[in-house]
Image 1: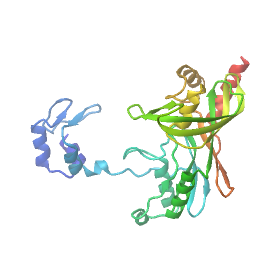
Image 2 (image 1 turned 60 degrees about the vertical axis):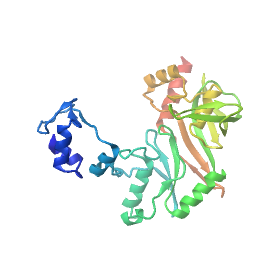
Image 3 (image 1 turned 180 degrees about the vertical axis):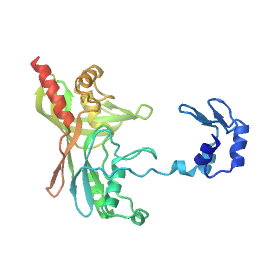
Image 4 (image 1 turned 45 degrees about the horizontal axis):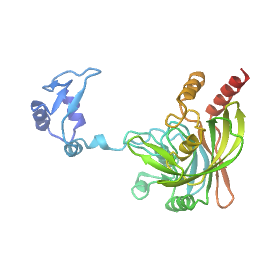
Length: 302
């Protein structure tokens, strides 16, 4: 046990660690320990230390983990920007030091391809310019240079870039709609509520039906404002939740879909970006959509 603690808190002294053991500020499986115990799988060590003390003595614990993979599906690249097709399940940006993220993979790719070095990272970090929810797939834009980051961010901010998504939703949708509403975020649940007349942040979303499968519809959705969970919350508010969505979707429909297809994420995909200069970038549609459509079609036939 003491060898483990020495590795964990390599900035401390043996005297400090043994003192904490004696005072029961470090315990093993809820009991006082001497440090000579042999650890086994399932053992639990608790450290009753202040955050400041732990950060001081265990600096290695807080070092950011570098991406172990540069596996990115690149759909467009030039000297200044990179656009990838992010899979569902991958964070856009890390939430904690141990997280894997699209942003880290992009940096790993740039370093492996010789476009950046460790020295370059000390002065500039390439970064994504838009975000997708973890379980939403599709197009992410990243700035490889300061020029690319500034230009892409400004186009997104000014809404001169048009962003389109595919969404498989509950219910039969027969006509196009243009939605206006207000979102209020509840930080405790990480969900948003939709208000038709405020208060909240104003949001705007448009959609048109592409294909129906009985009581489900494939929509093309234009994200006009771009707030947290905007598409998912607004579609749910008008009675057409995204299939597979655990926060705003229909739990029973999602259960049946998962049981039949194994799909665990919402069927929402950032499929196309249209830039102000007329250029268009598109992402391949994930296999989950064809799986879901096959299931829905067979269900309709039955």
